[in-house]
Image (cartoon, rainbow, N blue to C red):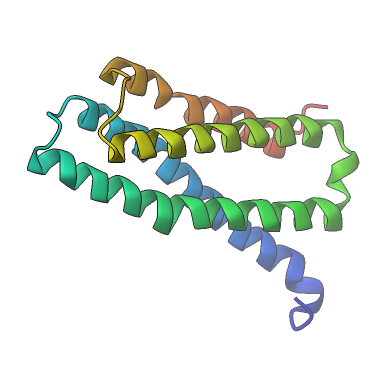
Length: 147
């Protein structure tokens, strides 16, 4: 960041947005995989394939993207002085809830990996909408800054 000087904020913001997009893509896709996995017989080749897909999605895309999003987002909030703004408090709360959903999906992935999922496909269809709803609120807070 020292090398970028005054341009650092914009570069960090660009990487932050890319990380958010990657995180959201994974958060929207993982529950969809769970829908299909929940409809699959335990022990089948298809079930085992879902396990690999889910694990790779979480460990290679979703987890790193969330970490980068948080680190850079906190830096941006500090540098921009946004931590004092009321809209930022709402955004922060929504991102915190999204992180909780992330934890819930991580836990569900472990259950699927151990063939002990107890949730039906309908549950995962509903959970598939939760990150999208949170994203709507987050984007409105960041772009519109309604208060």
